[in-house]
Length: 126
Image (tube, rainbow, N blue to C red; front, side):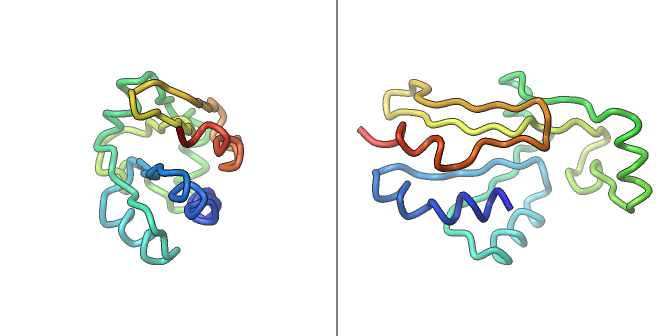
């Protein structure tokens, strides 16, 4: 759903001279599959073992009750991510200027909360 919302704003982002890249801890073949399935016009790259998210302090451990609930649904996050842990990146969105400055940042510790793509559009461009 979030990737679809980003896709719906992709042309505006490109028209403003920016690029869009998504990072996800899933194994790359899962990312490629979702990119194709949704017809995304931007790359979804694997953040291997959450290295990028962890380096910025943006990972959280999945609580035991959530792990149990996900397992009861047949979900195995470590298998999907190619790791041996249940850490997740916090939903985050950044606009980084050409000079490397962060022009917009949105981070949510609760994975159910995410900023809308339109919130960052005013920070894209010169």
